[in-house]
Figure (cartoon, rainbow, N blue to C red):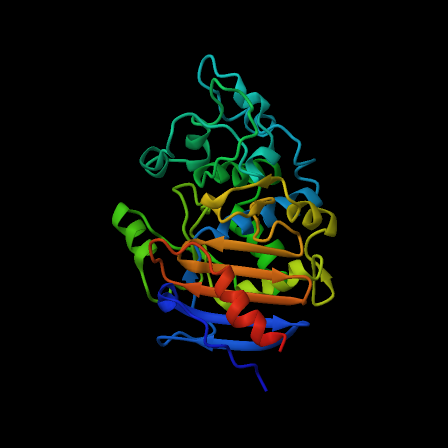
Length: 327
């Protein structure tokens, strides 16, 4: 008999559409709201960043990328020329991008410039670097993660959607994603604000490159399979999907953040809500979460439609779901 949730909730939880939870690799909670079912998906926002991190790990495992310490420009030098006088970009590593410690020009992200360009990965490179050099200061930058998928494309020679479908989703039993076919500003806005099921899709740029920092649509059940794979050190159904070495690096703490970021630590595009690798999470706007608790062998996945000022649900998960599972 499946577990029953506690009654803990808040005004921010009205946008939840799916909850799936496992303990000891057994499905214990599966709840759907407002007509959603197991197969329906939502744009899980910045959970996409954590998927990007996994793809980088797989690319390293397969030898396409040598190390997270590789310089970004080692992969782009044949297809991108930095602005005159720009020197810092040559010192930026893959690890800087994974830990959000890469330097950027400008005070804000150039959304309009990048999202109206022909190739988002090349466009955002114009913002990478700057006069201050490598400071290793944390700067949360959604568009910057696009550079990472560009590195996989250059080094593997593969279409990134094909790469993700073949090497990550297929071993996890997740149906292939396809292009969301959003070609206008209105399409992009509707994709962001849609409260209904999105389909098995991923938002893409004009080169058919998936968005690295947001935009993949997943169900809570699918996210839970990703969580189980991470919990089980890269193995899913007796098949190794990603190396334990990379996962250990990915879930290590590299930056400790203050209250502006929930007093959490940051790994390789994964959050450490309690500053410990015992609990890690992929967190997206709207409260989309993959929560992994190694102490209790728990995985929780939650989807929700975009709702301003709802960034994560770690407290909700721990008070409502984790407590129900360990009773």
